[in-house]
Length: 258
Image (cartoon, rainbow, N blue to C red; front, top):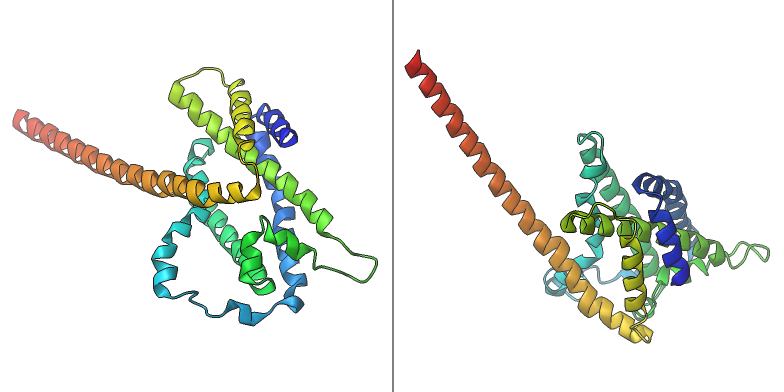
């Protein structure tokens, strides 16, 4: 954890543009690794593991399964991008491209895990896609390629945590109206290190993910995010109506004066 956090602190000292460029540089390698694992494991897939297609039933999938929407929490980063764009017109392209690419490779990842492992084995593993990479072999010479994928995924984790830390420190700086933010990243990473030491085993970590993190994401991203969006649109409509009334009053006054 210390190695990851030290890397995050050093990267955040450079600013937003280097972080964004680094993410863009490593993204093709991450996407290729997911696609490569999917293609090379097609021969090991068992299609019957995908049955039944609606899981435990329509009610379980579409109603009680709504709590699993926390898995799409990454979409919240789209909220923070417009402030860093030179031209807001590019936002729509960025949003559609990012959601489309994420959907495709999320589908590849889920398909790989679903068709390769029994449901019990895949849910008990922290990173089942890593186990899928260990199935890849090209004769006796090319074996244990999972080490390459681990290296790529560690870099992707650092890239992801760096951008997440930047947004967290940036939001905190704006909310607290601070002029300097160089020290904030140190405080945030220290808190992350302290909280990271609390879980004593994987069972506690799984409990925090399923019972705490899940509902925090649902409340912050979906609950508060949609509420702010609705209230902002209501405020915008009220402001537009007021402007329309002011313009009508000005025109009426001008006509009377004429």
